[in-house]
Image (cartoon, rainbow, N blue to C red; front, side):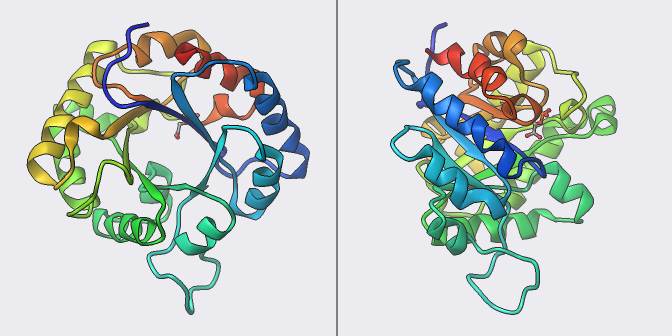
Length: 252
Ligand code: PGA
């Protein structure tokens, strides 16, 4: 596969899955990747409660640890929340913010997502900022308009390519087995790259734009080979080392 642009990232979002019993999967993945020459970075984002355990399993491997969501404050009276600084202390190098499940289930706005991304940057973490249209928005021909609005609202000004990763995740493709056509992915990613240039102070060409939504071993090569796609954010298929490896290997 011809790879262009910034070094790709394949990140696994475990969501609310994975207790101690799942530690065998990152252990297995680390072993499987040991002698593989990779042209991408690999990351797993487990639930925060198990982050330190995953980090110690990953010790000595090239697999990085990421968090799932953070509060915008560094500390304080925020029951049940976790700060970017806490994730950093647990060994994370990145955090996913603005995932559609947070936007939908927790009513998170672009403004809040932007504050969370700022918190990630403050803590020295990469903010993996998720964007994407719903099925109704796509059917109404509003996809690019929605992406523009989310880019303007969710990406803090002054963000740098080093600490900012964009994940384009059409809401209707998450966990459904449905994926956009490569033409649709190419259109969305080109639009995001163009908007990054114009709207935020990012080095657009150097910013990684991941595709997410029902990525699996059988469609990864096609999706990852699409122009302006610099890796994947993977949910369901990241839970088993063998499945995740099938995606990562696209970059071997
Ligand atoms: P999926 O989830 O791969 O299970 O569709 C992707 C995501 O929500 O990041």
